[in-house]
Length: 244
Image 1: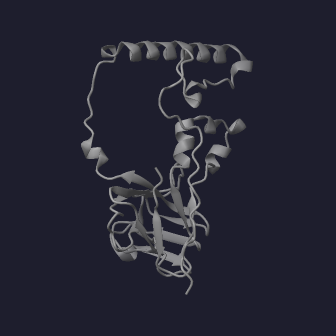
Image 2: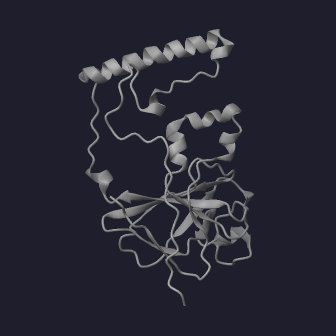
């Protein structure tokens, strides 16, 4: 099933909207790019689309409770402002997003990106009816100065099914209640312990890694009977704006 996520640009020169990339600076620092072997994190990197800043933004909070306690330097006056209080910095998204009925937007900071001094505030937007744009906010974690460079992502969006969470009933069970899952878990634990022991005993095994999750298979070699994703690459937005 193919869904359409529509992004209606409010301004003539909207900020870039781009598929979330696979790379993260801090993951590149690992020897042999070892961090990318963690498939859940690698998929999380690319989960959705990112909003990129068209200009540099520098914001500084002095620790005070008022909106005037944050100062913002930005050549686009409405791109980032101190609108709320208590150390909250607000970014102008400048798109009206529209999803099909029954689908919403989960909006968060760029996934697996660490920005010292601020924390992104995750939001769920009912984009299947909303006729106006939303803003995206960060909260300072301490008095400091933070800079975003032009082209740097400040937010990430992904499409989610509306009201799915409240229809889900979590149930806690004993592992022993599921014999097959118990056997698979014991097999994985044994295989994992053996790998760690070999890594401790031999320098040549230091970089060995368990590829079962990466390949979607159990410790005994069986393949998972569900859809397994190794690489996720969201589609590049198409510019369908009508000419003036």
